[in-house]
Image 1 (tube, rainbow, N blue to C red):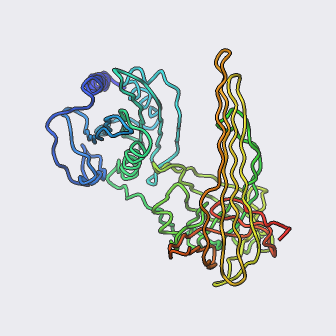
Image 2 (image 1 turned 135 degrees about the vertical axis):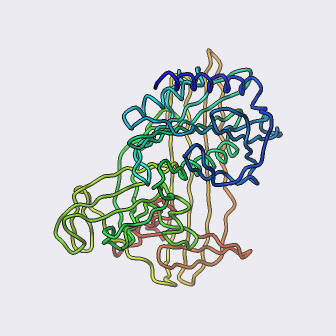
Image 3 (image 1 turned 30 degrees about the horizontal axis):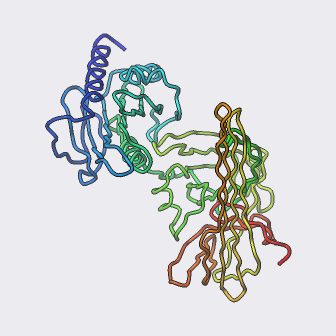
Length: 437
């Protein structure tokens, strides 16, 4: 960046240091309306009723939201900062994000917890970095910095969270994510929308792919996993890696959960062709980052082969279909470090009858030990969770469970093995049929 940008950065740092000392008690709050033009950058601001207000003065557009002290949480604040567009191109985006991170000097020393990069829906480069936590004057500070660059311009957005955790932190992040998705850097930019192009699409249905491997767990160990992943294709060009819940259409699901979805098109072939490739534009985060991939594609009977991996077609359940048996989902995770060990386990049982009734029971347990010097502490707990019973209904990829009180819970469901109900995937979890039933 040039000297003018360096001076602007120094000004930003001064403002943020003052924010930390005064705990974000900025003066002169004002009402604001959405959308807003910030020096040629267009964004859709959070609704004023959600508690955000314009705050502060200077080169940065700033919003603040305060959270009162409760029995469980300290008083906290969230601060959003947005720069006016800078006359810089794509090549300096990474350096610009680094400079903006350093507006909180101690934060630049922290490792990046979460990082996304790709392109926006309008084809601009985007980079997201999240860091936590710096402690100053009994205030816990975390930071999310977003940089967006076209061929000629850049813009930066920042969310600073002060003494926020749990639901309060997640709510502020969700509003910031929506704001980032709304950014229009150039006059020709359009709203964030997974709208297929005329040459997108060509597939229809739900397909499953078995993914296996190991991954680290919270206890310092590793867990083996075997997941029946799904991809749901819309013929016009939309796809989702999760089945819509609650009777929602794929369009509704992708509007509410963009990081589950993306767009695709077939190249050099088609559904009825023996070969070709498939291009996917996947939304990899709630900030609207998009990753573009092209993989080999072919058809194998009713199934698909993508990048040499088989994706088997999964037929929907007929409306009002009935099942008979008991299905069990078990989960266990354990591990140990030099000073601690722990494990957690749970079991869910779902029984479905031909007469349309169901019973459900659940169990969970946890065990943890910790050693400090010659002292050892530990805790072990287990118990049954309240069960339920009532009537069920199958339709398509949806299972509705209505309990005795009349409350209905809608779950996603599919059977990955053709002609067999030995395995049901319910809300993403593998339920195995008890052969003894």
